[in-house]
Amino acid sequence: MVRELKIERDQLSLRCRVADALRAEIASGRLTPNTRLIEQKLCTALGVSRTVLREALRQLEAEGVVEIVPHRGAMVASPGPAEAMHIYEVREALESLAARSFCDNSTTGAIEELRQVLEVLERVPSNTSVEANVLALKERFYRILLDGCGNPVIRETLDRLNNRISYLRSMSMRQPGRLAETIRELQGLVDALARRDAHGASVAAGQHVRNAARNALQTLQSMQQPQSPLDRKESNSDG
Picture (tube, one colour):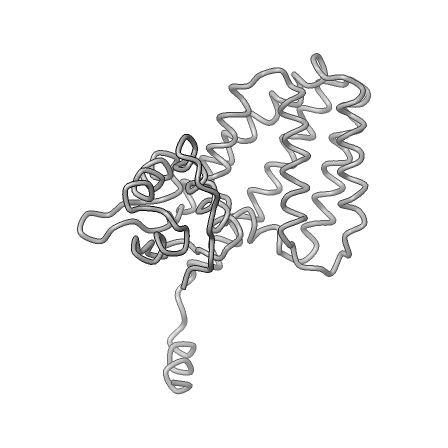
């Protein structure tokens, strides 16, 4: 059942608002991969017409976030290991380039903003699950980095790529110890950015994405691993 997601009615941006709301539900894990998106329920939850909803779904389909299957309707896309790996490879190249460009184009104030975000992340208890505010802080960190790099095409491309694996990123961040590792990796990146060390920043950004990719792919493989005959037998006996 989709939770109440009423949004402000603004005809000029209603489709985008609906797409944003669904994208957030997917990123949070409330709508998981392969979940069918039933139009009637979504229209009620969002308080919009089928026309607006279908426009939003087509937008998400173009982004690779939603898959529309003939005679079945829309469902949340489920990237396989190969697709996810390809996305992370492109992310590594783009984020390394963004870090290098940031050294040439950013202000001292932008670096201070990055440090402030890290300070807040460091105060998050290490044994906590990754809640929405932690993910929002990471998004804030990258927004500062990408705004400061001076190349809006990098930002737009990464936004689309990350939307396609948003649920996977959220799941991988919930792995024990991953938040602490992320903070250390981002701290190394910020230190290089503060020194205006373009090469060092590029290497640090690339390493962070490679580590994230390894963790995400392990998470994806565990999600897709079939049950053993014993597990299926126990599951059936419980029912």
